[in-house]
Amino acid sequence: MTATLEELTRHLDGYLHIAELPDDRRALNGLQVENSGRVTRILGAVDACQATIDAAAERHADLLLVHHGLFWGGLQAAVGRHGRRLRALISHDIALYSAHLPLDRHPEVGNNAVLARALGVEALEPFGRADGEREIGWAGPLELPLAELVGRIERRLGVPPLRVVATGPDPLRRVAVVTGAGSGLLAEARDRGIDTLVTGEGPHHAYFDAEEWGLNLILAGHYASETVGVQALGAHLAERFGLPFEFFDHPTGL
Image 1: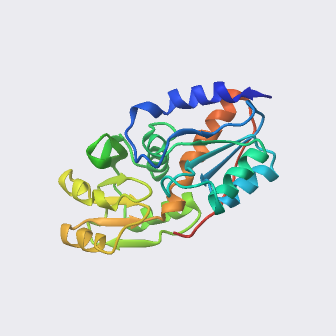
Image 2: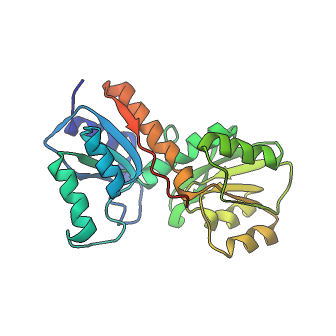
């Protein structure tokens, strides 16, 4: 099967509401690098790094679908490693599409919704305002022991959480999920009656926020917590366009 890059991009832009969600300007959501216009195979990955670009070339993928794109370092010359990444994409005719917050918040294939449902959180409601704008995470009731939630996270992501700050109620009653770097939302969790926040990573002071507000904080790993969205989005594209999709796992352990 073959699809055009134009129709895939048009579908992704609309399905993910790329133009509607404010984001860090470095994210540059959407198509970041084009190819000659034809797509026969899609590779998904969390990050647009050299290893994932090389994997796309080795697997003869025409489209690399990622959560973190090329431009997190800001405006930079196409030299050194940045130039190598661009040259590899162009020389192997690989298009690159990136979706950051639009993929985090999507109610069907988003990192947060997919992980929340996998953990058993029911009656999902929006949670977690990014920079004071729209909510990007999800929350809902989940009554079970903290240890069981930790076990579910490990089974779903394939690795144990990096850290569990068990300073809140046990058993749990209400859980919020904001993958990646979401520990700054502990105050919102406190204010909304949520006792447990599942995220990826957090700074040193997040421990004291959780401890002094009587909350549980689970740091599942930035990388690990954000593997689920790209996989779900790739499966969606495979079903809709009949294209083979593969997820390339390149864990950082962070």
